[in-house]
Length: 317
Image (spheres, rainbow, N blue to C red):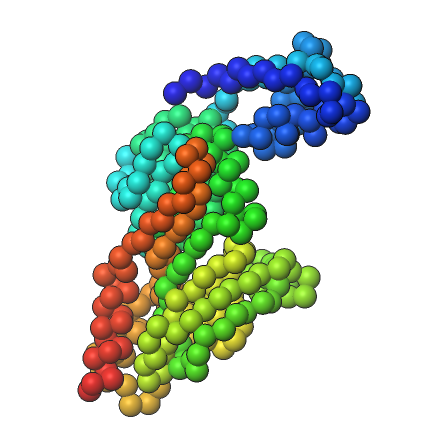
């Protein structure tokens, strides 16, 4: 896969008297506006071979020429970490992420992450922002996740996330017995005093979570959740906000609720379930190249199945 981008386009006269960067965004829609603005600033995107400013007006009839080379976006190291690949072509990569795997390097996690594994599997991803990662799953959340292998694919997928056309469905087990499904529409932002946490706050960003009951247990509920927005820790924060935190969520549940009368086996299972009971089960999107609607579904992981089995067995106890 080449790192060079060589493109040209003639500006239609009806686009005249508009900003250079606005016209470029329409003529080169495969690339984000911020990326095009940087190329204009660097002189890699020109009009009639002249370097202009993004705010300069064009009259129409000019030839825009883009000559750029993708460059490494970070200093991350490739690592031979196994990946459970569900689908792959020249444009996207869909994986089933296990619980316990950090998606992106950060403070205290400079190696051993999904990003390091992606760079080993597909070295050209070093030239794509965040190695093509367009959405994340928390370290202890398992399930399906898509990665872009090209800049145009990444821009396409980011747009789908922003216009909410990407379908993301999760399964979770929460504390307490829920009466039925519903919608949670509460803004989410950084916690006022604990900066590593998120919280429902009036100053937060819009967040919408749809949920429906799959199965009720005596003191817990298995739910299916669909995200309309994608805020950090959204499902975990919203469920805790309505007083139904996820089983095993040490961040947003004060403690594991052990109701009176539960059997010893369920008690042990609940206490030993040390991650949030959350799995990204299904992902649907428009393929960035073929424009075909595609969907992938993953099985619940073993620990999740064991948790559900223990809950069901306790019902029959």
